[in-house]
Length: 441
Image (cartoon, rainbow, N blue to C red; front, side, top):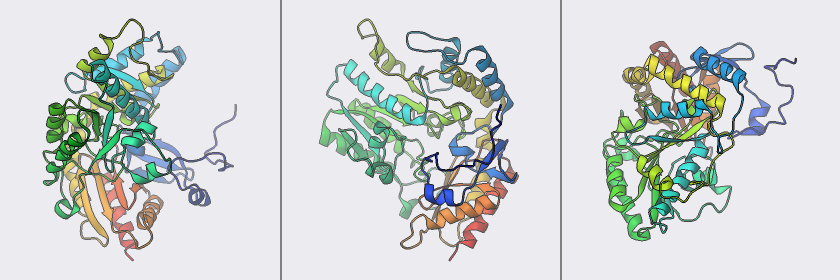
């Protein structure tokens, strides 16, 4: 049996996602293993994980409970279809998720990623509006600078320009709310910024324009991939009111904010406003096996299922929906979150993390710092004519110094595993500070 080598001898075959392939393959940086708060390179250099992988390893790396659950299930049954059949773990995993979703969001549809969750949520919203006799509601509303994955539904309602412009025409009947980033008023806010609730009123303008054709609005409780945009005080409350007023469903994309990231099991609890539909992925299985899910309110499930003729009620699904190994991983992961009370642990660490993030204020080229829960964004002044150059070089400096960060544009985004301790926080932000100073020119 051939062992997997930590040193690949051919970099050509793998077309890497969201990567400058030419630049990376000229100077590759490899991760060979992971444990706890750290990755290790193929030279055994420790790299503190300041990003929980990609916002996903919330319980840290290599958790024995999750690994053993996957191994045990693989030995019992590797795969079972969930089209017109079932297996116990899929139902157990759905019930486990529903224990922690907002009241009424009691039904769970499994996917394999956040992108699939977003497209699934949009389709469910359209199906529900049709089922309740509102077939004219075909319009979907996203938000500028929003990120909802890379399916054509997700990029259509998403609002990050480079993710959209390469692919031409997308879904029809899509519009966007303005983003909530107001640096002139909210720069260096700690937690929820004070200004910007009025931006939700833009939905009234879209209703005036499109009438009763809007099916759903999809937003992130905290926009992560665009560079950590925290919702202004009162914004989501106002958006909820307007959706209710106009018969529009409110969808939360909780792929990043779910499973403890904001100090509660889901972001909806932290912001105090519940959606009608909620997407999730990433932390659902601690990223040990790919899995996503969509939680829907009982009124939506009943509206689609109970009123349908005999047979299939929703013509949608994936081969791997509720995959046995993913289901086992989800159950073990959620049990671990509960056993170690990781959401509460994140909440308790938030103040220390916040102070460390804002200690970067005053450094050269740091133009904003924002944070919420165990998420922080450090916005940098870009170099003239060289967008992203400063942030990318800081990323490389941090990695070489043993800290993994994430950059998006000229913004450093941080989201460490929820097991992070104060000395990790000190190391992460100290390394970033050194790198920012080194790139001050």
